[in-house]
Image (cartoon, rainbow, N blue to C red):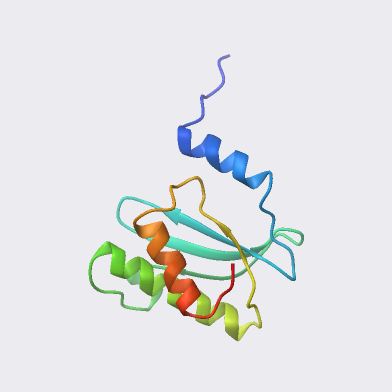
Length: 118
């Protein structure tokens, strides 16, 4: 039986995850970007718990508006607010195998603007 070949993004993500690990003192800010939406989670990998999350989905109870770049920035600010409310200021940024460009960069800048350090 043939094994599934990994996409370029999956190979990059596995390579990055060898190094980036979230802990209780410095959790991992993981980003996933689909063609329409963007998602961010703050994860403690040692205990396997998602501490907080935010996304651009309309169903999440929060309206995000504007272009996809502006939505990504708003998601970054929102995840930073949620993390700060839980006492988290320092995170490790996990871009999920995506290039640090466009919406991923905009989310990171929004999170920094919201008060997260990475």
